[in-house]
Image (cartoon, rainbow, N blue to C red; front, side, top):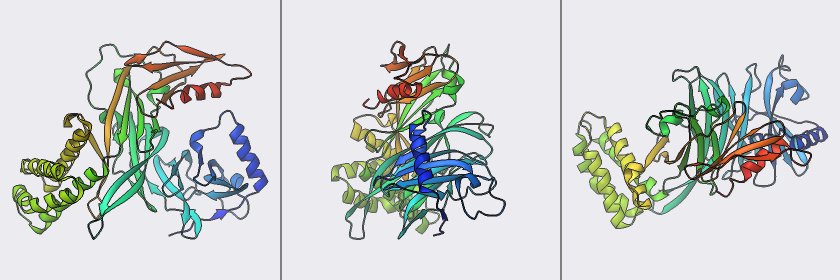
Amino acid sequence: MRRFPRVTISIAASVLALLGAAASRAADDSKTALGSFGEVYTVKSGSYGSLFVGDLPPDSANNAVLALDVLKDGKVSRYLVPGTGGPEAESDAVLALDTIGNRVYVVWQANRVFTVAGFGAQGDHLGWQEPVDLAGDPASTKRNPQLATSVVRSEKLDEEGNKLSVSRTFLHLVYAEDGGAAGPRLAYTAAAIEGTSVVPSTQAFDLRGLAGNAPAVADPANAPLSLKQRPVARRGRDGDNVGVAFVDDPRGELVTLELRPIAPDLHYFADKARAVIIETGIHNPGSTIAAIVDKARAVIIETGHRILHPVVADFLSTTFLDNLAAADPALSLDAAVRGAWAHVIGVGIALQQGSTPSVVHVVELAGTELDGSSRALDLRWVSRRGLPPLPDGDVKLFLSSRAQEASIAWSVATAVRYRETQGGGWDPQRSLSLGPTLTREQAFKLVEQRLDDQ
């Protein structure tokens, strides 16, 4: 593992800077994170020469860089974020914490590409992981990124057939972009943290596409530009889900989505069934899909019985195999088995929820591992609401921890005004008067806090 240099700074100066940032009315929560052992992480941007002292690389003093400050037991250390010391300009830096590995992850943008790097224990020392670029259109201009995390728990079988619980953290990034091949859009991408590795999603998804097709609106509300270009991502109350909210501009609606983990045993069964089919196909080149299904049937059923209740195992095995056998013969085996994989996960989720498979949507974020396990989430469509009349200017959107409710707030000369969702619509407009005991930023925070338990 490559080690990235640490540069020490004046402790007194750092403490004062951190205290100043904490007291600032414009403090940005996305740039500060609290670690599992009381350490405080803060990401800063500035010139190399202003953030670091001592010997610098030649001709680098004026380069824009990112630095990570770590406050622990009253002492501060500053570390250069890897890959940011060159002449390129970095922007939009945000932080997220991996609570499983107790690492902090910095996501930033340079040259129209988002990059992520993790900082934490690297063997017997603190250090950086190698930076990894996230999926996205490198030709598009990106703005307003928001980062959230969730923890996904899954299962595997060891060599003796015993179940092993596995946990991984997902980083979820939403942002606005334009100028790319897809035109103006709101995008979502993700990365899975697996031990000391970061596995990015294979693509950036269009949020409107994830939200599904909806009937046209005859007279859509006109949303202010600040809302159109500012999607929101929020970690859920239970930590294993993440909520997303955005404005569907052509329809003038506020849309909320939720990305949740798939039940570990169901996820593992579907992954193993897919892996068995692929392996059977490799060992039987030229065979039809129906012939491959027949050869793999007994192994898939046996695998299901090792993981699931026998009745559920029989039902899901049959569901998977029948769907695959009925696939269009013109499809490749990979495409056909992926369809069967998604279908059986959807049926399994519907069985658990008491719903129908047609309302279940599975998003596969990244390719499979060597053992066939995948990185996928259950996408739930939560709500669509027509927007109320809103002023032009800077309008902020806040989302509840369960992605069911939201608030919209904006400021005027002496107040912060806001509206909260209610059922399928909106409550009447309310107002918080500003003054010596209530600043604008405090008022916005109060509006956001009202959503914490919803």
